[in-house]
Image (cartoon, rainbow, N blue to C red; front, side, top):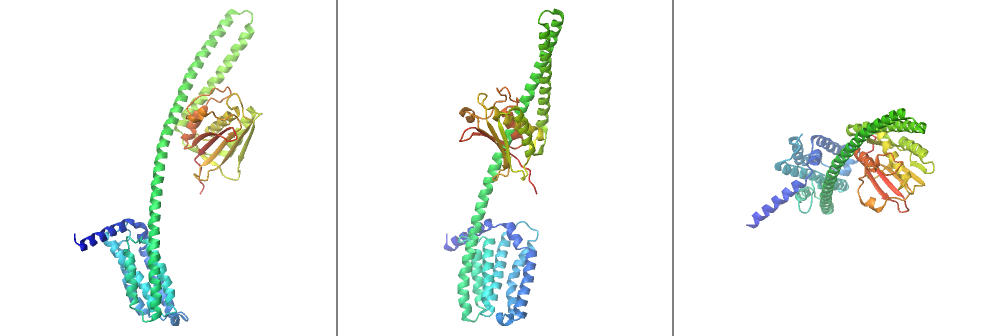
Length: 451
């Protein structure tokens, strides 16, 4: 392979790499018709001000006709804007056209620097440095893809032919390397920023995919849990109906048998009927709510009134436990919950009750309920902490799986069901032990966003 062919292949490879590095929507927006019309008006205003404004004629001494002729190469980029109006893609010829037009823009600004008087030339030199830096970032100019940097060098070289004073030579000698350095630095920075943003986007997509997969598993787990609840309540209802039948038979036997102790036995039978009726109603309530939660949509719930209500109701059951709600009441704490206020209140009530009861042998003396907007995720965070015995290492090491509880005063929902209901709303339930002792439950729920 000849050196010329090798050089041609290197240039084509570098050009493809440069094209692939471009932010096409950003380039099309910057080189669209609207900004170009604004630029044409700005150029005319600058030339008019430099020519006719008081003291500007002596300060700049700018030949307007020559300056307008120097602006003609920049119109290649205006033609690029017209040809790509409402387009979403740039062909290879379009990138070459954009390079030529951008070089023409830089030539025009450099020509203003060369054509103006020595005292006014530094003003246009500042414009040229800004233009070169902006183009370097916009077109991702790097040492490996220096196509626009070559154009900048050609623009400066062509403009240098227009000046005739030594002061201009010194100014060009300072401006040229500074502009090229700014162009390459800002272009390299933009490329590194694009890579970092792309990596962050890939990481975000991977995390989102993992969260969606976890959410699908959680929804399935929640549905299974609620199905189990309905199944258990159906069994419980059948058992209660059978027990009621037995109680009726016992009543009939007592009515025929009589004998000593009959009054006491009748009292027990009435108590049995009363308890069975209460349990039957309770089972129907759980059955109805379980069916409703399976298909219900999330509702917005104000957390603070629910916490206050739970503190009052649980406080009546455990007067010896100091239950406190610690929230910033001026901050809106509104969560999306599947099942609305009823579900959230039952879940929190169950969690606070578990905290008050401890492990069944040792109860808690104080329970603190705090809530806030979690700063990292933006979700609503609720912490239920107690000074009880905490969780055993075995329970912390295993996932929450138990559907029922052995505590005599429990609501019967169980920590597992609470977790399923929380996850069904897109939330998370976490357990841990505090360093100073006691259990800590952390609940994260989706928060209503305010515009």
